[in-house]
Length: 303
Image 1 (cartoon, rainbow, N blue to C red):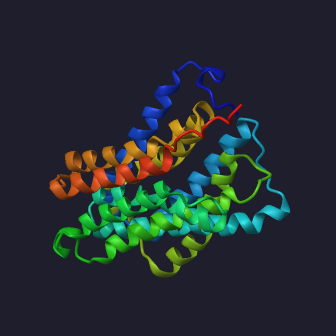
Image 2 (cartoon, one colour):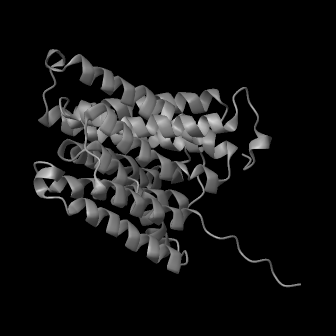
């Protein structure tokens, strides 16, 4: 896998894939909120994780990438997937039911900050002043959103806590993935994690939820289909395409642009308000992520 766009030319220019990722994942936020307001969280997540995971495994197999996991990898991947997929999908879904999609997108995309912070403790990465400042700015952005009265955040202030838990959980899972060398490719790793997440989520869904298709509006069903095919299957596949075409720093720009599109599309499609709090919070979070992701190049050694 090359870090240069020149090394992986295709029919479409490399920046097409990066822009596609921003649009697909950014517009998934208002779609998810629309779907979760009408559809059972656990059943919907079980379906998207199961079908999405199987599709990613098929894509990995067709591309010739290694799919089979070594026996030693199953337990560590299950642990990483519990944070990366299971907790992420459930916590973000409940958060979306309780607060606006634009707010949820901004808070969830503090995840690079938590990844960097957790990496300092679990991977012994250096906790630099940039990371500490980024953490402070990110927390400040969340605080600005939380300064709304609870009615503006939703019917329950737990919504913000759910979304923040999803972001931290994704950070934990990312660090666990980075701790070891895996026997399967990245597409297959995502597929296996989604399939493993579908099992416990599906068990809870069958035990606790009832889903009547005729009670769900056509709009919610279309949004659900969009999340499955675009947000999960296409989104993950395009993400790994972006990683293969660009250096990690450029690929990580997606962490900056996605919440902008998420907030903008939520305002356009759902009529969510954008006031000074949203703008200030977005600026603080984007600044925080930029500090963590775009690190200065090391100085060359003296001759």
